[in-house]
Length: 85
Image (cartoon, rainbow, N blue to C red; front, side, top):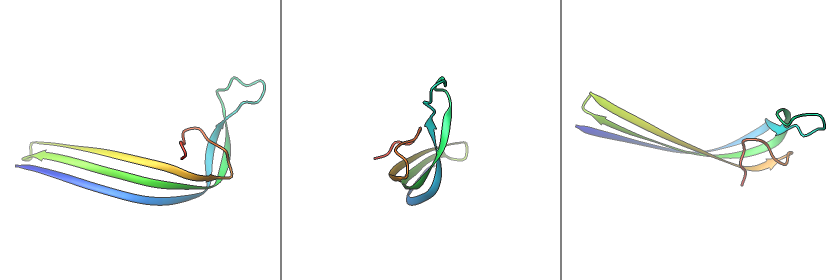
């Protein structure tokens, strides 16, 4: 017997006063440190899905995919690790 499971989700979040990490480019640093700055607001669109597969009760596998799109970054120009539209 084979059972498959599909779960999908969509969400929207608004983050306020979110800490972000920006490269420290001041003179005398080697570029390996960061400054913490705060974004006034960031909008986040969350997309996710999960797929499961089971053969009898002997074998099962589940995979998961998450995607976050950041938009509307206010109060800062850019940050490390966030790709904005």
